[in-house]
Figure 1 (tube, rainbow, N blue to C red):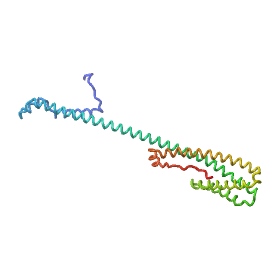
Figure 2 (cartoon, rainbow, N blue to C red; figure 1 turned 180 degrees about the vertical axis):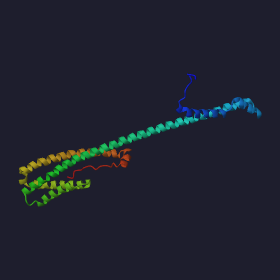
Figure 3 (spheres, rainbow, N blue to C red; figure 1 turned 135 degrees about the vertical axis):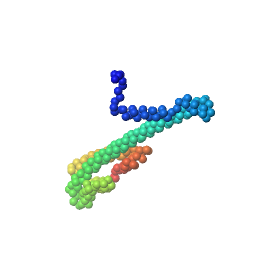
Figure 4 (cartoon, rainbow, N blue to C red; figure 1 turned 30 degrees about the vertical axis):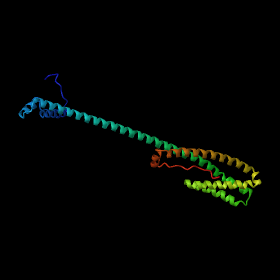
Length: 248
């Protein structure tokens, strides 16, 4: 055995034999130019026309292959462009969604701070009740209004219920201030004076948090309304938020 003979791995032998069979079939089904010329003589076709026909057919086949190649390349380019566009749209959509989520979170966080100050103000109502009761036993209606307004806020669950409860608290506190303004004895009370400081501080903090909340809502609403974000926002369930307006 020749030491330099190439050895074929057994696992590729079937593929080699199949490909060799196809090559042989192509070879046996083809003709040499001389064979075509001889065959043409039988029907009295000059050899130069056979050669011309061979060149023309080869040229047409080559053009067809080139057109197929160009069409394949064009499809690949269009596919690449399409994939790129889809990728850009997907990334843009993800960025838009994350931006809306972040903006909505800032609105929720700002509202939580507003609620903290509203809760603080509601928690001062028992002190208002105590001051009122100590000053004048006949002010039962004011005491009832203060107690009920606070209770309404503590029991409120939905945004609409909370808005209504906040309005009641505002009315109750405004009523208390009106009462205090006509009661010199109450105004001279140290308990009332201390309470006034607490309420003033709470109102100032509430005003600041309300401003921050409304700024967050404004930025969020601008994003939700802007085109084309508005189309995506609606599909994802992002809706405009209402501003928090003072009722007094």
